[in-house]
Length: 468
Image (cartoon, rainbow, N blue to C red; front, side):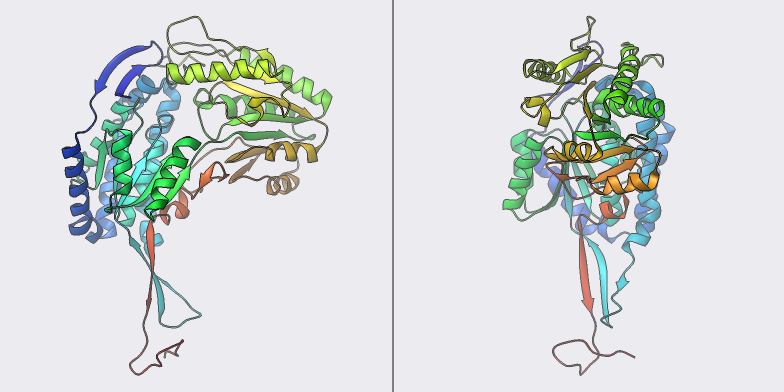
């Protein structure tokens, strides 16, 4: 598949880019390795922070330009694109500010003379998706560059302009060649990269299929990997939750980024038949008024899907759900206009035998369930191969926390749809992957926690010794 800018709002091909030549790829790896060994890892934290925070400053300085690349290539509403630019800059700044703290040696008090130091590993390969083309990179590049690693980024094929634009940030900020490298690589080239001994870790954000293939190849070569994969996140409305506020939150949680987010609220679960009817009525009304239009127009409330392929996959899933007995309460079809637009859609009456019961719906489609009790709601929330994020809505925050503890997920938010910030660890369990990004946990995924144990001259050959 070529690296190509196709405007999702029109379906028009804007620009095409060639894959990197094998000889150029080898030169890129060699440059990255030389940068790591001879330059980047030897720089002080302050020197690295100057470049990373400088890239954040450049991103803010050119925020409107960068937002428009996202809207052009992904079809993201312009306001959402601007928010992504701001968040990405915040993530870079967060790691520039906190790296000294995260890198500080830790004395092991129970073993005098023992110190744990944090050291980089080398080249980290980042395989990134299209749906948040800056945010996904920032949450890898920020911590890894500040840890002293260097990064090679293979971005999604449909966001080449975003990929090139992000690389320019670091060049403009004074990053040395090889510290941050963008490549337009084929699948076979990426496979060879994973196998290359100079690459010391691999991080992937993407589908289960992609994650499984990368994890298998990395594992065969004894390389650490982090997997941020899919999600089918539950949004539980307990019996005491304020209805109107919960409905507004459900629409936001399902439709943010036109529903194209791993951690969006995909399965709405409401307790109680009467409340379930009232919630569905309100939810459908708010979904129905979303207006498709040009995503560059701030008045537009419904953007396109990112690609024709993504649109067709979702339309097939809707048909499968309908054939399996689900009821389409709202929408269900393509919007008659240029571009890759689907109607806001609500599916209900989905039983365990329906194939859609265990699938992720990546777009403006919500699965809706009404259950009779809290226990059934939690069981339904957990009845998925995924475990990325979840939400619980209630008037009783203490009880909401208790319910959150019963959900098999990497993240649970009480009285909010799932969200993200530099200081909050992001990641899942089950088929949603393993490892964490963001916060101090994300900083520590690709480092050597190196033990240095110092004993006095004449110490016994084995065991701890006393130190004065």
